[in-house]
Length: 117
Image (cartoon, rainbow, N blue to C red; front, side, top):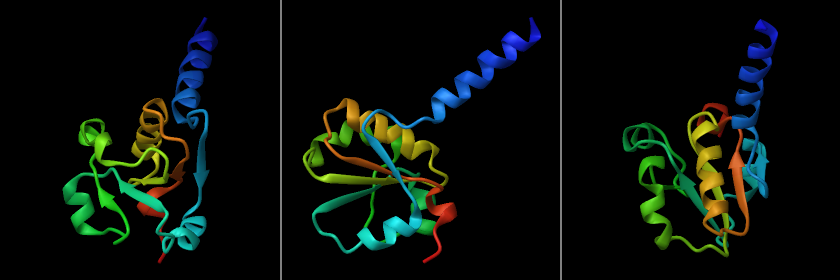
C-alpha cells in the first residue's frame, strides 16, 4: 500500500514538472543567442523585488500572479520566451500562455539561477 502512495506522489510531481504540450524548453546558452532577436518577446515572471535585484534588460517584468490580467498587452503570434528564478514559475506561465492561444512559447530551464552572462 505504501508503494502505491509513493508512485502516486512521484507521478504527481513528474506531471507538474513536464512542459505543456507545445512548450519548448531551452537552456540559458540557447537564450544567449536569442536576446538580440527583436521578433521575440521576453517575459520575466518573477516578483518585482527579484526582478529589481537582477534581470536581463530584454525581459519585461510580468509577475506570475498578474500575468493573466496582462495577456492582452502581449502579441500571441510572437515567439515568447519566459524566465523566472528556477524554471518552475516560468513553466506554469508557459502553460497559461499556451492555453490562451500563444503559438510559440519557450521556457528557460534553470531560469536566472542558471544564467551566466
